[in-house]
Length: 351
Length: 83
Figure 1: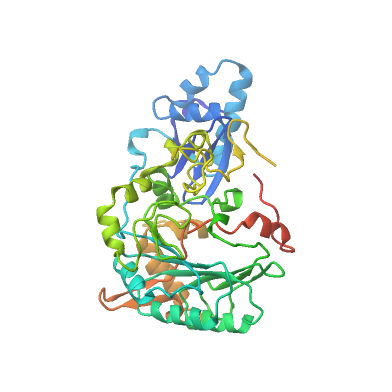
Figure 2 (figure 1 turned 90 degrees about the vertical axis):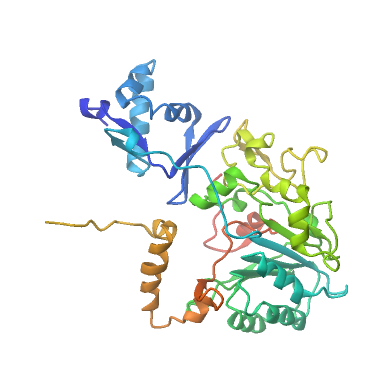
Protein backbone atom coordinates (compact mmCIF):
# COMPACT_ATOMS: atom_id res chain seq x y z
CA UNK A 1 0.00 0.00 0.00
CA UNK A 2 1.26 3.45 -0.88
CA UNK A 3 0.47 6.21 1.57
CA UNK A 4 -0.23 9.10 -0.76
CA UNK A 5 -0.21 12.69 0.40
CA UNK A 6 -4.01 12.65 0.26
CA UNK A 7 -4.30 9.60 2.50
CA UNK A 8 -1.78 11.02 4.95
CA UNK A 9 -3.98 14.10 5.30
CA UNK A 10 -7.02 11.96 6.11
CA UNK A 11 -8.20 10.25 9.25
CA UNK A 12 -8.48 6.52 9.65
CA UNK A 13 -12.14 5.83 10.37
CA UNK A 14 -12.59 2.48 12.05
CA UNK A 15 -16.25 1.81 11.35
CA UNK A 16 -18.45 2.44 14.37
CA UNK A 17 -19.56 -1.19 14.43
CA UNK A 18 -15.94 -2.39 14.55
CA UNK A 19 -14.89 -2.39 18.15
CA UNK A 20 -11.31 -3.01 19.28
CA UNK A 21 -11.00 -5.01 22.51
CA UNK A 22 -7.71 -4.86 24.35
CA UNK A 23 -6.22 -8.06 25.67
CA UNK A 24 -3.00 -8.58 27.59
CA UNK A 25 -1.02 -10.57 25.06
CA UNK A 26 -3.09 -9.87 21.96
CA UNK A 27 -6.17 -7.84 21.15
CA UNK A 28 -9.20 -8.36 19.01
CA UNK A 29 -11.27 -6.33 16.61
CA UNK A 30 -14.94 -7.26 16.78
CA UNK A 31 -16.73 -6.64 13.49
CA UNK A 32 -20.20 -6.52 15.00
CA UNK A 33 -22.31 -6.26 11.85
CA UNK A 34 -20.53 -9.08 10.10
CA UNK A 35 -20.19 -11.06 13.35
CA UNK A 36 -16.51 -11.69 12.80
CA UNK A 37 -13.54 -11.18 15.06
CA UNK A 38 -9.97 -10.41 14.02
CA UNK A 39 -6.92 -10.85 16.22
CA UNK A 40 -4.70 -7.79 16.22
CA UNK A 41 -1.41 -7.12 18.04
CA UNK A 42 -2.04 -5.13 21.20
CA UNK A 43 0.19 -2.20 20.10
CA UNK A 44 -2.28 -1.66 17.25
CA UNK A 45 -5.11 -1.44 19.76
CA UNK A 46 -3.26 1.48 21.33
CA UNK A 47 -2.69 3.00 17.92
CA UNK A 48 -6.39 2.76 17.06
CA UNK A 49 -7.17 4.77 20.18
CA UNK A 50 -5.37 7.72 18.57
CA UNK A 51 -6.89 7.53 15.12
CA UNK A 52 -9.70 9.95 15.96
CA UNK A 53 -7.17 12.54 17.14
CA UNK A 54 -4.34 12.22 14.65
CA UNK A 55 -4.32 12.00 10.86
CA UNK A 56 -2.89 8.92 9.19
CA UNK A 57 0.29 10.78 8.25
CA UNK A 58 0.80 11.90 11.85
CA UNK A 59 0.36 8.34 13.11
CA UNK A 60 2.79 7.11 10.49
CA UNK A 61 5.40 9.68 11.49
CA UNK A 62 5.07 8.72 15.17
CA UNK A 63 6.33 5.22 14.47
CA UNK A 64 9.94 4.82 15.46
CA UNK A 65 11.44 2.63 12.76
CA UNK A 66 10.95 1.96 9.05
CA UNK A 67 9.94 -1.60 9.98
CA UNK A 68 7.13 -0.26 12.20
CA UNK A 69 6.01 2.02 9.38
CA UNK A 70 6.00 -0.87 6.95
CA UNK A 71 3.93 -2.96 9.38
CA UNK A 72 1.55 -0.04 9.86
CA UNK A 73 0.91 0.07 6.13
CA UNK A 74 0.24 -3.66 6.14
CA UNK A 75 -2.19 -3.16 9.02
CA UNK A 76 -4.04 -0.43 7.11
CA UNK A 77 -4.27 -2.68 4.07
CA UNK A 78 -5.71 -5.43 6.26
CA UNK A 79 -8.33 -3.07 7.68
CA UNK A 80 -9.38 -1.81 4.26
CA UNK A 81 -9.40 -5.25 2.63
CA UNK A 82 -11.60 -6.63 5.39
CA UNK A 83 -14.00 -3.72 5.25
CA UNK A 84 -13.21 -2.66 8.78
CA UNK A 85 -12.14 0.91 8.15
CA UNK A 86 -12.10 3.73 5.63
CA UNK A 87 -10.27 6.99 5.19
CA UNK A 88 -12.26 10.17 5.80
CA UNK A 89 -11.55 13.88 5.67
CA UNK A 90 -13.57 14.86 8.73
CA UNK A 91 -13.66 12.25 11.48
CA UNK A 92 -16.15 14.28 13.56
CA UNK A 93 -18.86 13.42 11.03
CA UNK A 94 -18.54 9.76 12.12
CA UNK A 95 -19.22 9.59 15.85
CA UNK A 96 -18.65 6.37 17.78
CA UNK A 97 -21.56 4.23 18.93
CA UNK A 98 -23.12 5.04 22.27
CA UNK A 99 -22.39 2.25 24.69
CA UNK A 100 -25.84 1.44 26.00
CA UNK A 101 -28.27 -1.44 26.08
CA UNK A 102 -31.98 -1.55 26.77
CA UNK A 103 -34.52 -4.31 26.55
CA UNK A 104 -38.29 -4.21 26.96
CA UNK A 105 -38.37 -7.46 28.93
CA UNK A 106 -37.79 -7.71 32.66
CA UNK A 107 -36.56 -11.27 32.09
CA UNK A 108 -35.22 -12.43 28.73
CA UNK A 109 -34.36 -16.05 29.49
CA UNK A 110 -35.18 -18.72 32.02
CA UNK A 111 -33.92 -22.14 33.02
CA UNK A 112 -36.34 -24.65 34.46
CA UNK A 113 -34.74 -27.75 35.95
CA UNK A 114 -37.04 -30.73 36.18
CA UNK A 115 -37.03 -33.88 38.27
CA UNK A 116 -39.95 -36.09 37.18
CA UNK A 117 -39.75 -38.01 40.47
CA UNK A 118 -40.67 -34.90 42.45
CA UNK A 119 -44.08 -33.33 42.65
CA UNK A 120 -44.72 -31.48 39.42
CA UNK A 121 -44.53 -27.69 39.85
CA UNK A 122 -47.42 -25.53 38.74
CA UNK A 123 -46.07 -24.99 35.23
CA UNK A 124 -49.19 -23.13 34.17
CA UNK A 125 -48.47 -20.47 36.77
CA UNK A 126 -44.71 -20.44 36.11
CA UNK A 127 -45.15 -20.00 32.36
CA UNK A 128 -47.80 -17.34 32.90
CA UNK A 129 -45.43 -15.44 35.18
CA UNK A 130 -42.54 -15.74 32.72
CA UNK A 131 -44.81 -14.56 29.93
CA UNK A 132 -45.82 -11.50 31.93
CA UNK A 133 -42.14 -10.73 32.60
CA UNK A 134 -41.57 -10.74 28.84
CA UNK A 135 -39.37 -13.84 28.84
CA UNK A 136 -38.25 -14.74 25.32
CA UNK A 137 -36.33 -17.97 25.78
CA UNK A 138 -36.85 -20.97 28.04
CA UNK A 139 -34.64 -23.97 28.60
CA UNK A 140 -36.17 -27.03 30.24
CA UNK A 141 -33.50 -29.38 31.61
CA UNK A 142 -33.91 -32.86 33.01
CA UNK A 143 -30.96 -34.97 34.14
CA UNK A 144 -32.92 -38.21 34.11
CA UNK A 145 -35.30 -39.85 31.68
CA UNK A 146 -38.57 -38.07 31.22
CA UNK A 147 -41.78 -39.31 29.66
CA UNK A 148 -43.25 -37.95 26.46
CA UNK A 149 -46.44 -37.34 28.40
CA UNK A 150 -44.59 -35.03 30.80
CA UNK A 151 -42.99 -33.16 27.89
CA UNK A 152 -46.25 -32.84 25.98
CA UNK A 153 -48.11 -31.58 29.03
CA UNK A 154 -45.45 -28.94 29.53
CA UNK A 155 -45.45 -27.95 25.87
CA UNK A 156 -49.23 -27.65 25.83
CA UNK A 157 -48.96 -24.96 28.49
CA UNK A 158 -46.64 -22.87 26.29
CA UNK A 159 -49.31 -22.40 23.63
CA UNK A 160 -50.66 -18.88 23.34
CA UNK A 161 -47.65 -17.45 25.16
CA UNK A 162 -45.16 -14.96 23.76
CA UNK A 163 -42.10 -17.18 24.10
CA UNK A 164 -39.79 -17.01 21.11
CA UNK A 165 -37.80 -20.16 21.65
CA UNK A 166 -37.82 -23.24 23.78
CA UNK A 167 -34.96 -25.65 24.36
CA UNK A 168 -35.43 -29.10 25.83
CA UNK A 169 -32.68 -31.20 27.39
CA UNK A 170 -33.26 -34.64 28.85
CA UNK A 171 -31.63 -38.05 29.21
CA UNK A 172 -31.63 -40.53 26.36
CA UNK A 173 -34.48 -43.00 26.51
CA UNK A 174 -34.73 -45.63 23.76
CA UNK A 175 -38.49 -45.56 24.25
CA UNK A 176 -38.62 -42.03 22.84
CA UNK A 177 -38.20 -42.35 19.11
CA UNK A 178 -36.90 -39.77 16.64
CA UNK A 179 -40.33 -39.88 15.02
CA UNK A 180 -41.97 -38.82 18.30
CA UNK A 181 -39.49 -35.98 18.67
CA UNK A 182 -40.07 -34.84 15.09
CA UNK A 183 -43.80 -34.88 15.80
CA UNK A 184 -43.55 -32.53 18.77
CA UNK A 185 -41.23 -30.23 16.80
CA UNK A 186 -43.88 -30.11 14.08
CA UNK A 187 -46.59 -29.36 16.66
CA UNK A 188 -44.56 -26.71 18.47
CA UNK A 189 -42.57 -24.46 16.12
CA UNK A 190 -41.32 -22.64 19.21
CA UNK A 191 -38.93 -25.56 19.89
CA UNK A 192 -35.43 -24.42 19.11
CA UNK A 193 -33.45 -27.56 19.99
CA UNK A 194 -34.08 -30.88 21.64
CA UNK A 195 -30.83 -32.08 23.21
CA UNK A 196 -30.62 -35.62 24.47
CA UNK A 197 -27.72 -36.35 26.77
CA UNK A 198 -26.19 -39.71 27.76
CA UNK A 199 -27.03 -41.03 24.30
CA UNK A 200 -25.13 -43.97 22.79
CA UNK A 201 -23.77 -41.76 20.01
CA UNK A 202 -23.37 -38.13 19.01
CA UNK A 203 -25.69 -37.15 16.24
CA UNK A 204 -27.18 -33.93 14.96
CA UNK A 205 -30.54 -34.20 13.25
CA UNK A 206 -31.10 -30.93 11.39
CA UNK A 207 -34.54 -29.41 10.93
CA UNK A 208 -36.58 -30.70 8.02
CA UNK A 209 -35.82 -28.47 5.09
CA UNK A 210 -39.08 -28.99 3.33
CA UNK A 211 -40.82 -27.14 6.13
CA UNK A 212 -39.31 -23.70 6.44
CA UNK A 213 -38.85 -23.39 10.18
CA UNK A 214 -36.29 -21.15 11.83
CA UNK A 215 -35.09 -24.02 13.96
CA UNK A 216 -36.09 -27.41 15.35
CA UNK A 217 -32.98 -29.56 15.49
CA UNK A 218 -32.39 -32.68 17.56
CA UNK A 219 -28.98 -33.17 19.10
CA UNK A 220 -27.95 -36.52 20.57
CA UNK A 221 -25.01 -36.25 22.95
CA UNK A 222 -22.86 -38.92 24.52
CA UNK A 223 -22.00 -36.39 27.21
CA UNK A 224 -23.48 -37.49 30.51
CA UNK A 225 -25.22 -34.71 32.37
CA UNK A 226 -26.19 -35.83 35.83
CA UNK A 227 -26.75 -32.51 37.56
CA UNK A 228 -26.53 -28.77 37.14
CA UNK A 229 -22.87 -29.08 38.16
CA UNK A 230 -22.12 -29.94 34.54
CA UNK A 231 -22.91 -26.33 33.65
CA UNK A 232 -20.45 -23.47 33.24
CA UNK A 233 -18.46 -24.93 30.35
CA UNK A 234 -16.39 -22.18 28.74
CA UNK A 235 -14.38 -22.77 25.59
CA UNK A 236 -14.29 -21.34 22.09
CA UNK A 237 -17.40 -23.35 21.22
CA UNK A 238 -19.37 -21.44 23.82
CA UNK A 239 -18.27 -18.17 22.22
CA UNK A 240 -20.15 -16.40 19.51
CA UNK A 241 -19.05 -13.16 17.94
CA UNK A 242 -21.80 -10.80 19.05
CA UNK A 243 -23.87 -8.41 17.01
CA UNK A 244 -24.20 -4.83 18.20
CA UNK A 245 -27.01 -5.54 20.67
CA UNK A 246 -25.35 -8.61 22.14
CA UNK A 247 -22.04 -6.77 22.39
CA UNK A 248 -23.61 -3.87 24.29
CA UNK A 249 -25.31 -6.24 26.72
CA UNK A 250 -22.11 -8.21 27.27
CA UNK A 251 -20.08 -5.05 27.78
CA UNK A 252 -22.41 -3.52 30.31
CA UNK A 253 -23.96 -6.50 32.09
CA UNK A 254 -23.21 -10.04 33.06
CA UNK A 255 -23.34 -12.03 29.87
CA UNK A 256 -24.85 -15.09 31.57
CA UNK A 257 -27.03 -13.86 34.41
CA UNK A 258 -28.39 -10.61 33.05
CA UNK A 259 -32.20 -10.83 33.01
CA UNK A 260 -32.08 -14.56 33.66
CA UNK A 261 -34.18 -16.38 36.22
CA UNK A 262 -34.15 -20.05 37.13
CA UNK A 263 -36.17 -22.54 39.05
CA UNK A 264 -34.28 -25.61 40.14
CA UNK A 265 -35.68 -29.14 40.42
CA UNK A 266 -36.82 -28.47 44.00
CA UNK A 267 -38.70 -25.32 42.96
CA UNK A 268 -36.13 -22.94 44.43
CA UNK A 269 -35.82 -19.63 42.62
CA UNK A 270 -32.22 -18.73 41.80
CA UNK A 271 -30.22 -16.63 39.36
CA UNK A 272 -29.18 -19.93 37.84
CA UNK A 273 -29.74 -23.46 39.14
CA UNK A 274 -26.03 -23.78 39.98
CA UNK A 275 -25.97 -20.71 42.25
CA UNK A 276 -26.10 -21.37 45.97
CA UNK A 277 -28.48 -18.62 46.98
CA UNK A 278 -32.20 -19.34 46.83
CA UNK A 279 -34.74 -16.54 46.86
CA UNK A 280 -37.62 -18.71 47.97
CA UNK A 281 -39.72 -21.46 46.48
CA UNK A 282 -41.91 -20.99 43.44
CA UNK A 283 -44.75 -22.64 45.33
CA UNK A 284 -44.91 -19.71 47.73
CA UNK A 285 -43.23 -16.75 46.07
CA UNK A 286 -43.99 -15.09 42.72
CA UNK A 287 -41.04 -14.48 40.41
CA UNK A 288 -41.85 -10.79 40.14
CA UNK A 289 -41.62 -10.45 43.91
CA UNK A 290 -38.04 -11.74 43.81
CA UNK A 291 -37.09 -9.38 41.01
CA UNK A 292 -38.75 -6.36 42.64
CA UNK A 293 -37.56 -6.90 46.19
CA UNK A 294 -34.30 -8.81 46.14
CA UNK A 295 -31.49 -6.36 45.51
CA UNK A 296 -28.82 -9.06 45.42
CA UNK A 297 -30.70 -10.97 42.72
CA UNK A 298 -30.34 -8.08 40.28
CA UNK A 299 -26.91 -7.01 41.51
CA UNK A 300 -25.41 -10.09 39.90
CA UNK A 301 -26.78 -8.92 36.55
CA UNK A 302 -24.40 -5.96 36.63
CA UNK A 303 -21.11 -7.84 37.10
CA UNK A 304 -19.58 -7.35 33.69
CA UNK A 305 -16.36 -8.79 32.33
CA UNK A 306 -14.44 -5.58 32.93
CA UNK A 307 -14.86 -6.21 36.66
CA UNK A 308 -13.77 -9.84 36.73
CA UNK A 309 -10.18 -10.65 37.50
CA UNK A 310 -8.21 -12.14 34.59
CA UNK A 311 -11.27 -11.79 32.31
CA UNK A 312 -10.77 -8.04 32.27
CA UNK A 313 -7.57 -8.46 30.25
CA UNK A 314 -8.98 -11.19 28.00
CA UNK A 315 -9.63 -10.35 24.37
CA UNK A 316 -12.59 -12.76 24.30
CA UNK A 317 -14.35 -11.02 27.16
CA UNK A 318 -17.29 -9.53 25.24
CA UNK A 319 -18.08 -12.73 23.37
CA UNK A 320 -17.69 -14.98 26.39
CA UNK A 321 -20.85 -15.79 28.32
CA UNK A 322 -19.15 -16.01 31.70
CA UNK A 323 -20.18 -18.08 34.71
CA UNK A 324 -20.70 -16.76 38.23
CA UNK A 325 -21.62 -20.12 39.72
CA UNK A 326 -18.33 -21.99 39.45
CA UNK A 327 -15.43 -19.73 40.33
CA UNK A 328 -11.68 -20.16 40.76
CA UNK A 329 -12.10 -18.52 44.16
CA UNK A 330 -15.62 -19.29 45.40
CA UNK A 331 -15.31 -16.61 48.08
CA UNK A 332 -14.77 -13.90 45.46
CA UNK A 333 -17.71 -13.21 43.16
CA UNK A 334 -15.34 -11.29 40.88
CA UNK A 335 -13.05 -14.26 40.34
CA UNK A 336 -12.41 -15.97 37.02
CA UNK A 337 -14.81 -18.77 35.95
CA UNK A 338 -13.45 -22.08 37.24
CA UNK A 339 -14.10 -23.95 34.01
CA UNK A 340 -12.37 -21.47 31.71
CA UNK A 341 -8.98 -22.78 30.64
CA UNK A 342 -7.86 -19.74 28.70
CA UNK A 343 -4.87 -17.77 29.90
CA UNK A 344 -4.99 -14.27 28.36
CA UNK A 345 -1.54 -13.47 29.73
CA UNK A 346 -0.08 -16.12 27.46
CA UNK A 347 -2.91 -16.19 24.87
CA UNK A 348 -3.02 -19.95 25.30
CA UNK A 349 -5.62 -22.56 26.21
CA UNK A 350 -4.58 -25.00 28.87
CA UNK A 351 -4.64 -28.65 27.79
CA UNK B 1 -29.08 10.42 -12.96
CA UNK B 2 -28.91 7.80 -10.25
CA UNK B 3 -31.04 8.82 -7.31
CA UNK B 4 -30.34 5.92 -4.98
CA UNK B 5 -27.65 3.36 -4.38
CA UNK B 6 -28.39 -0.28 -3.79
CA UNK B 7 -26.33 -1.56 -0.89
CA UNK B 8 -24.29 -4.64 -1.47
CA UNK B 9 -25.08 -6.47 1.78
CA UNK B 10 -23.95 -9.83 3.01
CA UNK B 11 -26.46 -12.13 4.69
CA UNK B 12 -24.82 -11.42 8.04
CA UNK B 13 -25.33 -7.70 7.56
CA UNK B 14 -28.96 -8.20 6.55
CA UNK B 15 -29.61 -10.16 9.72
CA UNK B 16 -28.22 -7.36 11.83
CA UNK B 17 -29.72 -4.39 10.12
CA UNK B 18 -32.49 -2.44 11.82
CA UNK B 19 -35.92 -3.91 12.25
CA UNK B 20 -37.51 -2.24 9.28
CA UNK B 21 -35.11 -3.96 6.93
CA UNK B 22 -35.25 -7.36 8.54
CA UNK B 23 -38.98 -7.52 9.02
CA UNK B 24 -40.26 -5.83 5.92
CA UNK B 25 -37.81 -6.63 3.21
CA UNK B 26 -36.29 -9.86 4.43
CA UNK B 27 -39.55 -11.47 5.39
CA UNK B 28 -41.17 -10.24 2.23
CA UNK B 29 -38.69 -12.36 0.34
CA UNK B 30 -39.34 -15.36 2.56
CA UNK B 31 -43.07 -15.00 1.97
CA UNK B 32 -42.57 -15.87 -1.65
CA UNK B 33 -41.12 -19.27 -0.94
CA UNK B 34 -43.57 -21.88 -2.20
CA UNK B 35 -43.18 -23.92 0.99
CA UNK B 36 -43.53 -20.93 3.28
CA UNK B 37 -45.84 -21.38 6.21
CA UNK B 38 -46.35 -18.25 8.22
CA UNK B 39 -47.43 -20.15 11.33
CA UNK B 40 -44.05 -21.81 11.51
CA UNK B 41 -42.18 -18.53 11.49
CA UNK B 42 -44.39 -16.22 13.48
CA UNK B 43 -46.83 -16.29 16.31
CA UNK B 44 -49.58 -13.76 16.68
CA UNK B 45 -50.26 -11.93 19.90
CA UNK B 46 -53.74 -10.48 19.77
CA UNK B 47 -53.09 -8.11 22.70
CA UNK B 48 -50.38 -6.45 20.63
CA UNK B 49 -52.29 -6.89 17.38
CA UNK B 50 -49.11 -8.06 15.71
CA UNK B 51 -46.94 -11.05 14.97
CA UNK B 52 -43.57 -11.90 16.40
CA UNK B 53 -40.97 -14.16 14.86
CA UNK B 54 -39.79 -17.29 16.55
CA UNK B 55 -36.08 -16.83 17.12
CA UNK B 56 -33.38 -18.54 19.09
CA UNK B 57 -31.51 -17.00 21.97
CA UNK B 58 -28.54 -14.97 20.82
CA UNK B 59 -26.42 -16.41 23.61
CA UNK B 60 -26.39 -19.81 25.26
CA UNK B 61 -29.10 -19.96 27.92
CA UNK B 62 -26.85 -22.29 29.85
CA UNK B 63 -23.44 -23.78 29.19
CA UNK B 64 -24.25 -27.31 30.28
CA UNK B 65 -23.45 -28.89 26.93
CA UNK B 66 -19.79 -29.14 26.07
CA UNK B 67 -19.91 -28.51 22.35
CA UNK B 68 -16.14 -28.91 21.98
CA UNK B 69 -16.49 -32.64 22.69
CA UNK B 70 -19.41 -33.04 20.32
CA UNK B 71 -17.72 -31.25 17.44
CA UNK B 72 -14.74 -33.55 17.73
CA UNK B 73 -16.92 -36.65 17.65
CA UNK B 74 -19.42 -35.65 15.01
CA UNK B 75 -18.27 -36.93 11.63
CA UNK B 76 -17.47 -34.85 8.61
CA UNK B 77 -18.13 -31.21 8.41
CA UNK B 78 -17.65 -30.14 12.04
CA UNK B 79 -13.98 -29.33 12.10
CA UNK B 80 -12.23 -28.15 15.22
CA UNK B 81 -12.43 -24.43 15.74
CA UNK B 82 -9.34 -22.27 15.58
CA UNK B 83 -8.52 -20.69 18.91
